[in-house]
Length: 146
Image (tube, rainbow, N blue to C red; front, side, top):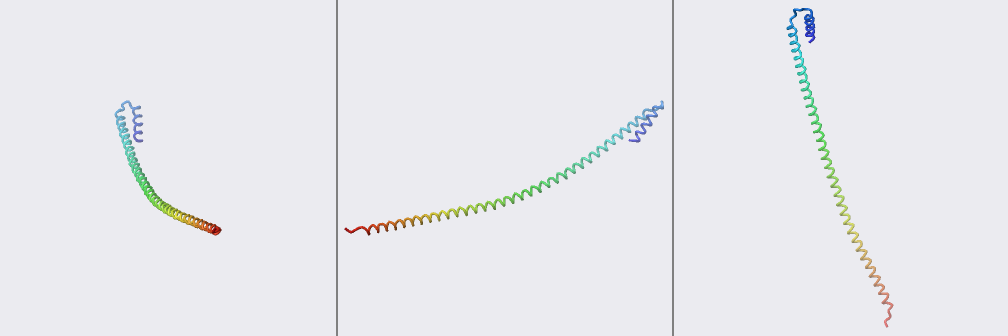
């Protein structure tokens, strides 16, 4: 491009100084400028295409990495979830077992209380009977046979 500008400057000076200057010489130079501009444009476009391809490759790598990270995170979450379900089942089983033991203990205590109150009532009845017998015996001993 520098060479073309230098040649354009030379031809411009020549056109100003020489009355018999051929204007087609500048036209040929302008065509060279056009070709040089087109080549520069094509080179820039080619470079841009390369950069786009590199960016697409980089984006694909980033997407692959993100997919891998997401898969790893999901696998870790699934393992955590499975562990939590296992722990929950163990705790639930423990609670059910404790509740069953408490229910059985409650039934046992109910039976023991029923048994104890039946024995208390029986003892009270026996005591009352004995007291009544003693009272009748005492009264019948005082009665005169007349």
